[in-house]
Length: 452
Ligand code: UDP
Picture 1 (cartoon, rainbow, N blue to C red):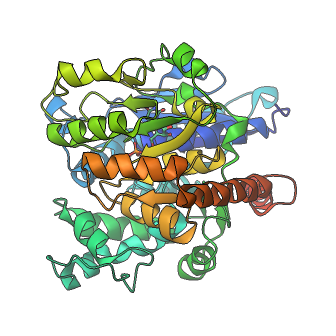
Picture 2 (picture 1 turned 180 degrees about the vertical axis):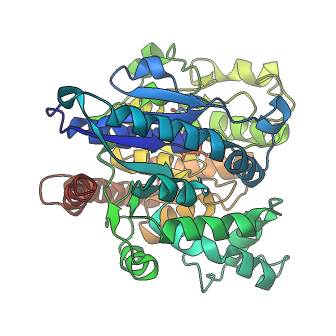
């Protein structure tokens, strides 16, 4: 780590796994460049402070009831959080600023800015009142972030029974049928929430993306034009910093000796992230498809993946018995470490942005099965633009799963996909090296924050 530069950055992550991980990654990057870090977080889904002894963690009350934390409507959850956390956050921030002012000269650390997840929309008035510069971190890919503000308008225009492959004009490479699925979720709060997010972003001192030009060639210049604030695409330099320590779930590592015994690039890793849900019959189809493919597999079934179940009791014992030593099921895995493992040859994924980026960084080709929100766009980027994965087109049927695995692992198409993934991995790797685009963007972010 570099010597302290006398500056402290305050971070405010949104309390879901896919937002905590990139924020903690950013914290590690900034800390390695001499910044001190304070993470202000809600009681709900609080990150494990003991895993990050070099950072200061401060908890604020969020007022969420047990039932509210279990809602499926994330926009509703975030709207509640924004309403209830504004005052506690302001109190916490004001105290921090006062105590930093009263420090002795040699202990003094200037609080230079707040970096908050783009999902926190109450922040402009708070930081204005205490005169603190504010940057937003987008955990979405640039193109989704840029275009998703148009979703309420697109909702009014789209035909609900559209099953077309046509591109959505205002949201490429999303297709009409993706848009219909994306809009299926109940989202009565979405329009005001997106408007507040847009306002908070436009009035910020900059936007940070954990992404790079290689992922978003066309979207970045457009984002710069639309938002008119500095934009930093600092890349996916994640591999320098292990991610597992920011996990909200207990990780099972008991399968590692089994993984060690598998042949190079032979195992299918299957995970659907921290939010997606599916039905019991869908999980059974996936399990059968995996078994029938003949490839060894590691399947993550998060508690809650199949609603109303304890865990994997919906998978019949007779089916489990046929996995033999070919298949392992765990509740949560150290994903980054798994993707790095030489035995992993493919990733059947829900296409959360973190999962996509982690897969590219490790050069693992994907089979795409998006369920909600930005996952539909990410899957199209993977399959239609970078062409480093195969799309299941939401056909959660054993034969489809089996044949996509066979194509990826043994067909000509799979070979071409793997080769393109190798090239993309190299390109993305180069961008975080000295003078690469993400490297330069990180340098300008550091200069920007230091100038406040
Ligand atoms: N993850 C993990 N173990 C698992 C599944 C997921 O550590 O078994 C991590 C994964 O590495 C990623 C995050 O959880 O960093 C999930 O984020 P993503 O954006 O992919 O999906 P989300 O959970 O937001 O849907």
